[in-house]
Every structure is written in C-alpha cells, then in structure tokens.
Amino acid sequence: MAGIVGLTKIQHTNATDAFEVGTDGSVTFSVDKREKIVTGSAQDVTGVTAKTITGIPSNAHCIRLYIDGTYKGGASQSRFRIGAGSIATSGYDWRVAAHSLGGSAYTEGSTAGCDSYADGASGSSYTLWGYYEVRKMISTTNRYLINSRLMSNNTYYYNSGVGYIDLGGTLDRVQWTTVNGSLAFTAGKIYLEYTTT
Image 1 (cartoon, rainbow, N blue to C red):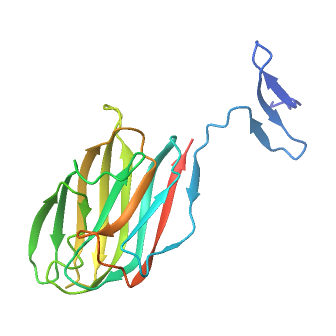
Image 2 (image 1 turned 90 degrees about the vertical axis):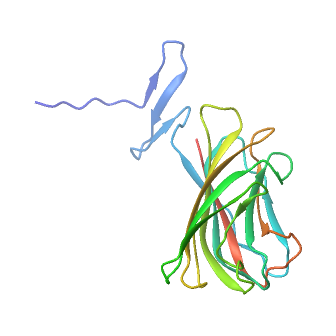
C-alpha cells in the first residue's frame, strides 16, 4: 500500500537546497537545468540592405533565424551569415541542393556566406520563407554547423543547405543580407529564436 510523505524541501549533505516544494505543489530547483526557448520580436527588413541581430548569449544553442516573406528586386540572392564580435564575411564551407517544379536539381556552394540560391539566380525578384539553424559542434571549439530549409515562388523552388564555419569566438550575432550587400529588401520580416539551458 502506497503512503504519503510530506516535505517542503530537500537538501544536499552540504546544506545546499536541491529543490523546494511550494504550497501549491509546484517544484523549484536551485539550479534549473530545463531548457528555455527565447524568441525575439519581429525585425522588419524593408528598406535595408542588411539586418544584424546581436546579443545572443554564450549559452545559446539551436539558434534559428526564421525568414518570413523577405523580398528584394534584382539578381542578388539573399545571404545568411553569423559572427563573434563582428559578422564573418569569409571562411564558410556552404552547400545547397536546389529543386524546382520543372524537375531540375542542382547544387551550389559559397565561402562568403550561406546563400539561398532560390531568390535571384535568374535575375528576377522572388519571395523567401523558411529558416537557418545554427548549432555549435562539440568536437571543435567555435565550429558551427549551419542548416537551412527554404522555399520561394521562383518556379516553386525548395532548397536545403548545410555547411560550417570556424569563428574566432563564441557566436553572438546573425545577419540577413544579400550577396552583393547593397541591394535593399522591399518587404518581409525575420525572427530570431534560440534555446538556452
């Protein structure tokens, strides 16, 4: 037969509180190891050539930048980059597999950033949706793995990308821009989300 044990607190032998039970039955831990998801506010990219979001904490992981209908004219493609103290403009090892409704499929690569290859390769203007995800590699200090899933109204393109970059420190910022860096977006928003422990 099960019994009931009444308690309000459990301590370690060194007298440090491990956790405490509230009068409403809630439990609080002295060191909360549960993951927390932090989502930033929408960042409008209309009228800017680049939008950089800084202040990402050092304990962030599974960092995602969501692309919500960003649009720009001309043949310059959109580009995602990250940085530690400043945005890294080289050193990426990036690959994209692109598929279109017509059945064509091709791969592209870049060392200057994580290019979309979905919204301007043909010299036309297209809208993008999707996300870029960044995770720190465990085996190497400050090596970051980057993945992307993007779609556009450019012949129903669906692109998936993967790559990595070695930064000089802990990632603290991300950027959404264009390949030539001077073409302004005319619509759309981005959202930053990351998990901390």
